[in-house]
Image 1 (tube, rainbow over the protein chains, first blue to last red):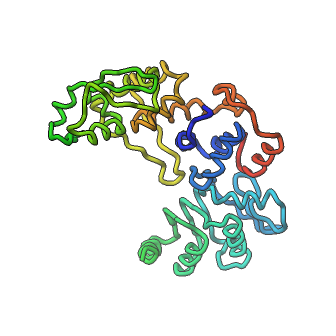
Image 2: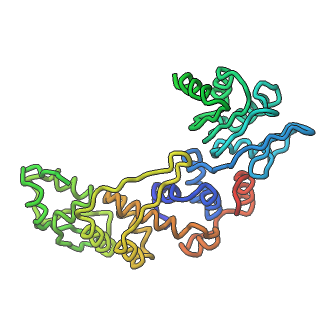
Image 3: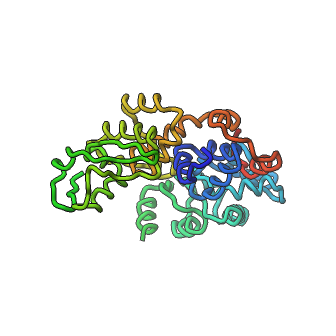
Length: 166
Length: 178
């Protein structure tokens, strides 16, 4: 086992989910360094979504944990950083989370800066009457790659997709 | 595999001929070429040697020992006509999709459960994708759901991380549930 090439270790880790992989870092020094070197290649952790809280201060919760808040808590910062190893199943925006408002833009800017990567989102739901150009710009800036986009009106959706793909 | 040998002998004919393979403990194995070819490494050697291939003096395998090669050959015999396996991953999470194994394959791994690491290394060197990926999956299956302590015990791994290092790993992996 001591002579096992890292290649084989890596290969078997790919059959596991991210939680198992991270837990295996505790097994021994060699497993830890093998996993550590390939953290960016490993399977992503699936997060269900974000809850954006507006009162009393803006904050964002994912899986019951704060990933954004005003202030400088280290644990929150680390969670935001590790978003680069995550994929978000569904992101709902709209109404109170109007993309044009400064706090919302600040939140996304901060999350993308901390993780050093755009947010990986499987399905984006947007329930506000917003011009599609604006949403497109917002997505390009903070989200990548989006596999499904749900907008309120179907005509808008079709148009949007056409323009987004071009 | 519709490969032609360098001297133009067609595969079905060549596949029935014997070749001698010598492992690093000087054991000789007489194997049908059609079986040996499941290993891409051996297949390449056979093709490279072409006409100069002396089937009786054998092909040396400096990185595999007899007891493991014996087990590998069992796999090759069973898989000599098997199609190439397809390695797939979830397009979103990148997790590798688990293969469905036949009853024969399950039994094979039950029998050689204590040799999984050696089998993976041999399959890696011999380039036998089916044996390589399936063995890795079996190792993953053994690890899944077990605590680091249980894994160390199972594989005889030394607990060589300090408590500080473990604490740092836990701090960094903020999402991980242990």
